[in-house]
Image 1 (spheres, rainbow, N blue to C red):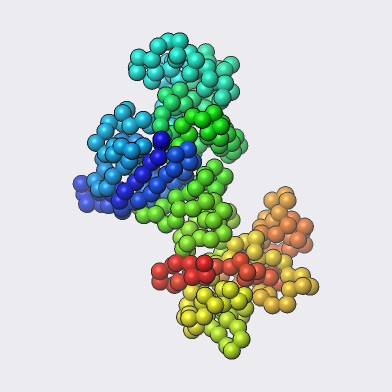
Image 2 (cartoon, rainbow, N blue to C red; image 1 turned 135 degrees about the vertical axis):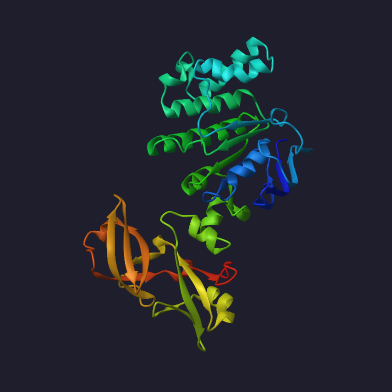
Length: 372
């Protein structure tokens, strides 16, 4: 078993600064869990506490069935892949991958089998005699991953391993690591992985579940699709998704038949399921959130929830376009098929339809999602 459990884990430094505030989380055996959040949210600190590289000042870290708070990193059954590869420059790929096993006094024939298996899995077989300086960044990172695999740990820990790579290589390595996780599971080997990133695209494409952190606290833990479609609060809604969700202040008001929100002077009618949940907010301010793909160019079937915007920029992305427009003093982003933006010009007036079936409303003070 390679479950990882965090029970009220805290980190407080000697100067009194508290970086991690009572984090509790269950990571299942064989799960790919991603920690994501902005810089300074304590995702790497939390990972390093699991690894034993940071002291824990409160709570428990449990790997398997064992509390590991006071166990040395080398005895925790973990293998870590770092951002900067951490390869020995004077050693070949084979020697780098085998080094940890040699220290553990694993027999040479077993080392050879493990290294060759990992090299085949990561397409490194032809590079085993090379030294790190003779390889690209992506190849070096694969060596670092291979070095972790050969140890056959209970848990793999990845600390922003792709942030030093260019955009194209990052995409390739995302696929490599995701395939590796699936292949290890298929072979019945330990495949529990905890992956830290600040890139929410990496998180969405790689994780079985995602733990969103901010200021050392868990904001939400869920599957990528649930985080995207059912954000628990304003922070998650704004952080997950690219381009980001449009979030603005609005006011709720009701009449005998409908519930409306007033956004920059535009009266938008809420669908009945959402109206029921926010009726009690009559006369109050809320945060109104809507994703760019739910703001579309008006067509003949749209009769209500039409907003006139002044176009700032139209970016053609190939198969789609991003239209940035202003309503009053607030800027919005719309994501539309490319053909719809061909004739959209700077400073022109354009009619947009807001699909309120897919909008979200958040309490102005608690920032919790009140439409779930």
